[in-house]
Length: 83
Image (cartoon, rainbow, N blue to C red):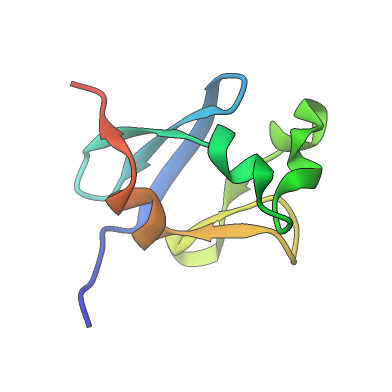
């Protein structure tokens, strides 16, 4: 099982684009727009709800509430470097 860097910080850059800072000091952007079509995430199309994201305990992902989250692996593998 591959390990991925934990998340230190997350912030919204513009609607549905987030910047993630990982423990290895690499910063990446993740475009969330395509996930809004998924039934698990479509309620986040309410931007006021979406922008209330936070880093999960231990840095293992990001979350909006106890039911809606994304893992550090998803964010690491499917994001673009900010450089």
